[in-house]
Length: 155
Ligand SMILES: Cc1cc2nc3c(=O)[nH]c(=O)nc-3n(C[C@H](O)[C@H](O)[C@H](O)COP(=O)(O)O)c2cc1C
Image (cartoon, rainbow, N blue to C red; front, side):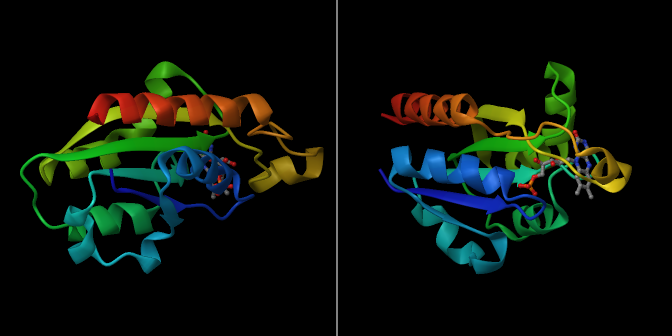
């Protein structure tokens, strides 16, 4: 199985921590969208797309990359994110634009993962921020467990 993880993370590198935990399990490389050549993507059996959530969506670099992907027949992908606020509908909405772009390129989204990430955006920096210490050990173990379930799905 050839897996790749593409991740955009800059605020506190929260999503990169999640990406690295998943990459370990999937024996995958984790790289930013700027290092990805869209031509190479169809060579992978599974691709994880991850991002911090900024203004209720994946980072523009991830959305732009998905626009550049080559159309595939039956691609397999999963999504993951970290954000300040969690909630089932909120995560589904935060992932929506990315999910729709990938689906339109011929990818099925096998599953989606999200956890809280430390946030000091805007005025929060004056109050010590939100979710300090997240993702924590438990979040990263959940990310590893999620990656194991992805492997089961593509066996
Ligand atoms: C510019 C900016 C915008 C953000 N917008 C949202 C948002 O709309 N919803 C949310 O839940 N969190 C939001 N956050 C919090 C981040 O999603 C959270 O801190 C995330 O873990 C950052 O990931 P990173 O460290 O991988 O970049 C925002 C953070 C920044 C810096």
